[in-house]
Amino acid sequence: MIEYKVLNKEEISKVKEIDRSDVAPGIYKVLDGNLIIENNQFIHPGFNEENFERVVRELTTDVEMGGVFIGAFSKDRLVGISGFQSELIGNEKNMLNFGPLWIDKYHRRMGIAKKLVNLSIEKAKDFGVNKFYISATPSSNTISFYLSQGCRLIETPDERLFKKEPDDIHLELVFK
Ligand SMILES: CC(C)(COP(=O)(O)OP(=O)(O)OC[C@H]1O[C@@H](n2cnc3c(N)ncnc32)[C@H](O)[C@@H]1OP(=O)(O)O)[C@@H](O)C(=O)NCCC(=O)NCCS
Image 1: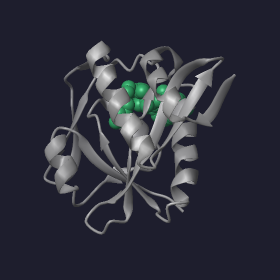
Image 2: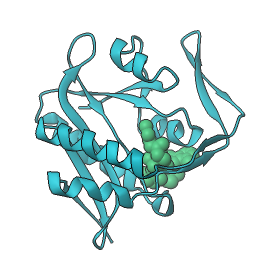
Image 3: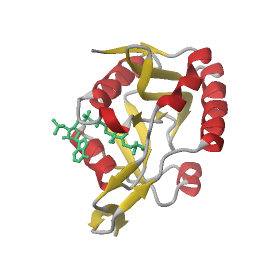
Image 4: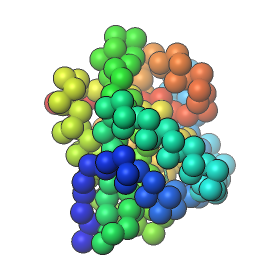
């Protein structure tokens, strides 16, 4: 059974228990404002210790600043994480920056990411917004997931986030 709970600062380092590696058959790109898929294999090798140290530092700061991160636990082990920073972003400052969303390689296609997105939406409503901004890895697995949850290509990407991840697919998720 998978249990879900908001992570406190001390629990953030459990993110190291997640194998976020990914091999997908395609890579998404944006061409003339449309999403297209290229049949090139996407490979993410997963995080090494140095990557994880940086992630833990960044997420800890995010929690200190009011960000919300939810963990999916199998017994005591963290097998999935999602959440958002507290800062309002976008040109109209009416969106929360969603992410990360990582599900352990051996726990995928069980509905964990879908549940985490929905729990994150419930928490985001407390911030008075109805939109997530998602800078998404272009892996066809990842984009297929986000599209299945109702995400769409954002018309005007956030300048700062686009500069940071120009190869990502910049999406929005509008919720009620
Ligand atoms: C993308 C990711 C978060 C999906 O997590 P997940 O828990 O496996 O997703 P779910 O089980 O909730 O999937 C819900 C639906 O999304 C779609 N979906 C999920 N993974 C998919 C895939 N690999 N290919 C096609 N559709 C997919 C399906 O419609 C699925 O429903 P179904 O299983 O009933 O067909 C996970 O693969 C992952 O962690 N990938 C590596 C890290 C990453 O890229 N994170 C996002 C960074 S922006």
